Length: 344
Image (tube, rainbow, N blue to C red):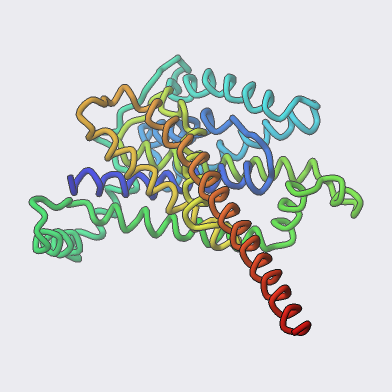
């Protein structure tokens, strides 16, 4: 049980980067971007192929981020310059990326073939390299012994992996907070809030839309490259439903932690991704559910995350109205009583 929860937290931290990208388009830019399902695989495929070709994992990851940025910019160009509906532009780019990802994973020095997956079992990744850095320090052993001392029957031996993904995600979250408060970030936020208003200040909303989509899909591709290196494989179908997972993370986080400030909103997205993975892991432990029910579980989680906050809000409004009604009745009763005393 503990190992299952631990693995979910690990993956949730990585998926949080993807959720931040989804938050940037859906909440900040107000753009229904479905490119995510394709750009996630683009990041995974690019990083995996470059690692197989002998490139350093960090260089491979950086190239994957650039590939995701280009994919996002292409969606933006289709929408702004091609005048294609935002939803349709994302769908078209997602379909195009499916074939492009197959080509990327089949790339070699000799030719380009169609290949649906890549295995990284014997290759160095970011995690294996940092694991080699943490191990001599004894961090894995110390933390594992501590967890066992708390009564856990088993403890994971990959604490170094958790530390590195946590550091990466925190850095990305803080960079997102900083960027959204810069002049360009504020312009992107204004573009999402009211395009007509920001155009009145002679701002190029098309440019900010393209840039926002590029940054969003760069984060998604970054998450995909880390997932590929974490799970030691890349598959062309690993991005299916990724947009729903991202939305679930955003909605769950916002429902629990709120969105009063940018810092709080992005923190809510990170915790939402972790909570989603934990809920998903616990759901799979239900005897009558199977791994093939993943999409059904995801849909149910999203529905609950959307419906429950509305029910809670309605209940609060109902109590607030009832409280106001009682206060008015009390005031009227006091006025009647005071009037009676004055007559007496």
